[in-house]
Image 1 (cartoon, one colour):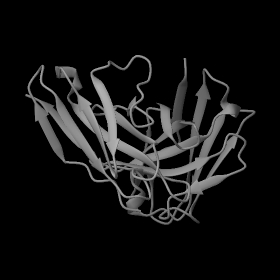
Image 2: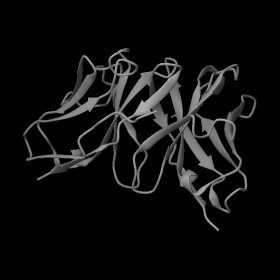
Image 3: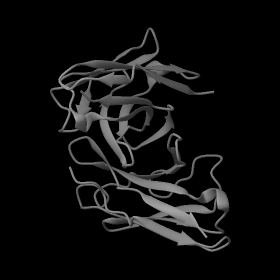
Image 4: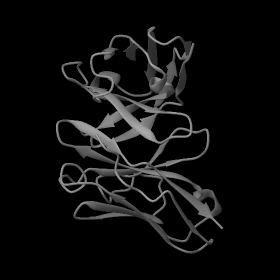
Length: 110
Length: 119
């Protein structure tokens, strides 16, 4: 059960946009529109930011957006703010009633 | 408001057992599936197991199947994870999380409980 592939780190300056990719296979990301993204600050529990590829829970700023093309999903954060600095994890439903996470991406706001 | 509070973590020797609990409040527990997700120190998130809202179905990651058992008591609004034959690779913070739409995503998470397997 391999993890989804994410870049280890990305960075951007305040106000800029960054995109985090998440690559899987046809058995997970490519096969289902059930990709979600979680933000985790150090020492804290993960927080849901995007679900079902591109839906945002109430309370999550519209600066966070999700998309998918084939076996790769993406999270774009526009208008970067200092508080966006955190680890981000993608997650997908997978064949045989499983859930698989990405390895995580550390976002640094310069 | 939704609250999930894990307990039961600690230091345990390899080969021994431990039971984690997750007390739920602020929502109708019996209506939701529940998951355990773990995070080894300095590592990423790893899904461990899920149990259906009524306990009728349970699914596990390969590495814990046969050693871990997920269960729930809807009368007590509590989720459990019985962990047997523990190894160092099971050392992690264990989070419980509420399921939405049958494994599509997790909308609420607990604060986690640390399990350390060491002699």
